[in-house]
Length: 299
Image (cartoon, rainbow, N blue to C red; front, side):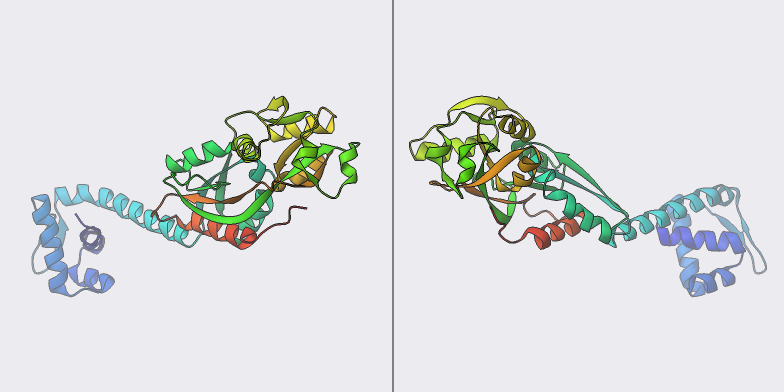
């Protein structure tokens, strides 16, 4: 059965008149008769009895009426829902983002998104960088925001901006007297960092190892917020992506630009290569590019 056939059947069943049904459907008498005939042949029996004066439903035709009404209602509802999703009148988008991004830069972006598309729901998975890649790769989410993956990654990456690492130190540290500091100065202090296999930890160790330096790690944590609180309490110093600067200052630490070496890496959007995003995901992707598609200050 096709939707066209079911609509034709209902038009005749409701009016018990081929002439009235033709007007309602904007079909010729012959076209309507052929449509009903094809439906009957497909089902294997007659749905109507008719003569020159009357049209009546057969017993099988009577039994088909409530089923046909339900099928058409479901079809119309499906059409309406898809149309609303394509026009962003409703829908859902799922996003995975590393906590440093989800907790700092994402909220104002979501506020812009909600103002434009108030009926589209957003699910945010704030997970570590490595899990962002896994969730996009496993199609658990449509979009991911993370550091640029290695060349061996099978995911598509669209950079938004370069993020540079900054030092975070206690408010009463003598290092706060400097406009910027180098790594040699920072590494003289006890160092607090994220636990492996954090991408932040790996990036720092790789950059410093290339310069013959090593992190004097004394405290480790899974969460950047905990690292910030440890620094603010005077337990040591650390280095974090600049996008966390506001959060670190709220926790009571001070941020200072770092040099020699400058450690930076692109942050961007991850998607499945060659895959087409839903209308809702594409709209959020466009706002991310609009809001962050330029370098940000690291000071």
